[in-house]
Image (tube, rainbow, N blue to C red; front, top):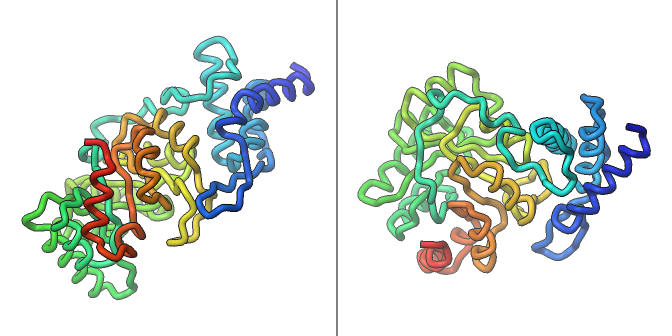
Length: 311
């Protein structure tokens, strides 16, 4: 296939998918800013792969995700003996997601984790657990190891007598020692965990949740077979500096189709009025921070948000 034919194939992919995935730049507070990206160096030479790599870059996917999608599109074509520009890749086998050993998977957790409150202190954990929030995470930021241990033990004590499932952000050894339900790690923290550390977490029986921000990170998360996968940031958030742009609803929907074998948590800038649309994608949980900790009446806000989720 000649260069102009590859270009025509890339154009066809963009034509069929621009309305859904197209890179757009908006400027309102709840918008998702996605802009065309440079096409990364190619790792293969098949025309379909090359066309998909260019098209996905033009649609605003960062280099590692454009590469991941191009590889999947090529696998899809080889599996079906046809390169279908209309079918966005969504079969787990085309992303290599069917090769893991189930015996090495982390313990399971409910598919419907419901409202997932990410909270700064053990006191907040206790408040939201007593308010009936089903899943809570302690995200306690400190360099004082003694303070971290104390706060995690207090959080574990705070959920006693409630039905809340408690995850601890990052501090896995202290979470094991305190008897938490699970831990949650970001991609950088996952990459920093050595093999023996992951083995220790697995052996402890703790559940493991992993943050992802696109296709490549979802594939990376699947390699350790966590208990759940968080997808975000869906909308702009001011809580932390994100390495990737907000993903938006169209990408969230595509991620859910691909990763439906896992319990899924949507996170990032999600307000009450967006709960219905986010829930409709099929995620089993929506995580919030500001919607609770900045609310005038956090308990009332929690009840309102829980009422907006499917029963």
